[in-house]
Amino acid sequence: MKVLIDMNLSTKWVPVLEQHGWHAVHWRDIGEPHASDNTIIAWAREKGYIVFTQDLDFGTLLATTYVQKPSVIQVRIQNALPKNLGPWLARILQQHETALESGALLTVTEDRTRVRILPFKENEI
View 1 (cartoon, rainbow, N blue to C red):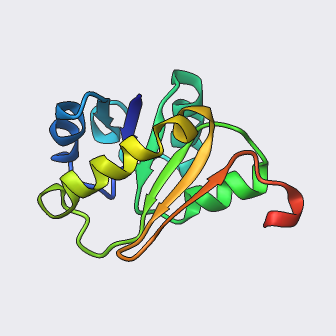
View 2 (cartoon, rainbow, N blue to C red):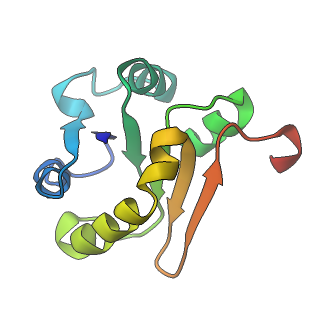
């Protein structure tokens, strides 16, 4: 699994994800820091990456475009630093790896995880 870490998350996520066996890259290291969400999502789709973000706009983009990929991991937790979430998030990603590889929106909050398979149907929005 290849994970693209959005600008709103720490670069410290790269080694954390890699230690669990995933290839990870931070957007800061490959793209324009002020790139639009559309640019980031297009890059991820083209290169076969899953987007890891705190930005809710990525879920909206998936919902309004009805695309099957890329998958998005959307963390809705205030303290999203790897030292706080690393091992816990790794277990969640392992649990949902098949869905993420196929195309899904994985939303993680402090008290629940929700997986929505892509593409969304019109009545799901």
